[in-house]
Picture 1 (cartoon, rainbow, N blue to C red):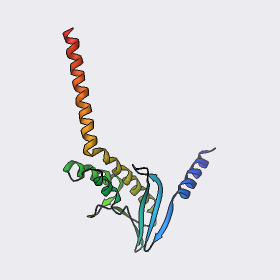
Picture 2 (cartoon, one colour; picture 1 turned 180 degrees about the vertical axis):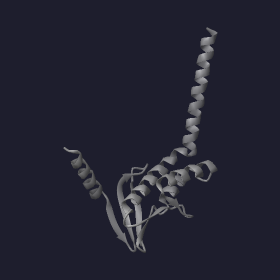
Picture 3 (cartoon, rainbow, N blue to C red; picture 1 turned 180 degrees about the horizontal axis):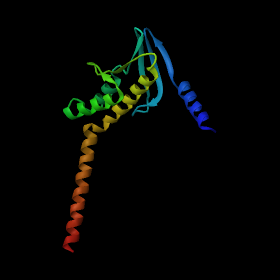
Picture 4 (tube, rainbow, N blue to C red; picture 1 turned 60 degrees about the horizontal axis):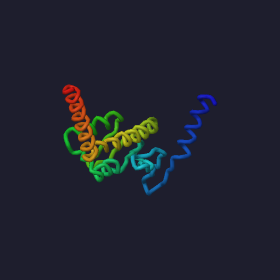
Length: 155
């Protein structure tokens, strides 16, 4: 199989696995990409004049907060902002992630929104249970290392 055939196969898979559903003025786009729950990522599209508005409708951040990941600390807000800025994605006051796209850059903006959703999902590992668990694991390893050094010193 040639590289071109592999690219064409990937493109066909992506097209086949992406589902568009009209809901009033909006289109729901179910992508083949999975979030941390192994659910397909869904985004929403609405025509906005000559351009398009794409959003996650607030799902990504709401889901993180429901799972105990507080994004309202200064450091976490900064990480969220850095993540979103890296993909050119914005967050509105209702915590919806969104981009505005022209017909010429629609594909790139849609891709960037999906990438941002995946990256923001990774902030889940900043939830208190994960941080606490990692902290205790690191402290235990450090104490074990000190004990090992102490034992070898005494011999």
